[in-house]
Length: 299
Image 1 (cartoon, rainbow, N blue to C red):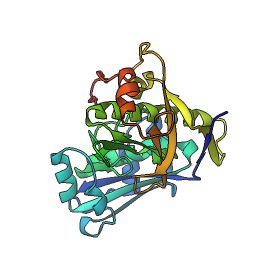
Image 2 (image 1 turned 90 degrees about the vertical axis):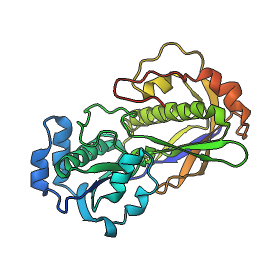
Image 3 (image 1 turned 30 degrees about the horizontal axis):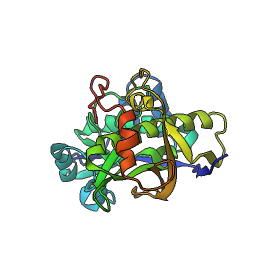
């Protein structure tokens, strides 16, 4: 048996959504609960709002401890400008065990959307580092990772390539993922590999937690494979037969995420830093011409 990774499962995870608004006062908890729609997810949100596991706090933007995080958000210029110029911040904070995810994070986002609708605000997902695409739209009952739950951020790397890192997996008790030394022309490939692997890790973790919800660590092989179909499953698209899996190695490394300790870097099977691997092995196997579901934009 090859090397194994032992991923620590935190006792709790935290998800925060910031609503940037010019309204000085937020609806009270009773009014907020009444404003939630019908459905099972709303029932979960109502129950959590009466507990310390889901809280709503507010302050002036000038006094907000989260204002600095808005400077690092991704997104379009207009929505970022509206987020950064608002006079007040409301913050929805959810604390949940990994086994309670993603349901509790979904409930928290439903509350954030409801607050945004009540205050004409914009919503920033502080875990994913992104504004919500439709801040006052309905929150889907069914969880799909492609629904604004995962950010992928790109920056120059040492040498001639770029690095790409996920943001948002830590709210589920998972490490973020990192791709390094990626040639510029293979950036789309790297982003798709990150998304496909994020889908697989999150799906496998949910399955594992359903049988061991109180376990303190999750062991998985460092030498693993990516099914190219998982790139399409990330977008909630049933894949055709895309051929064989892509062998790769997961290497623990420091995380780019401000709330994380360790990430997993995607490396060739030998664990080296071979930039040509992205062209030679990953690119031919990974689908790049994606047709995501209606309302979603491709990478």
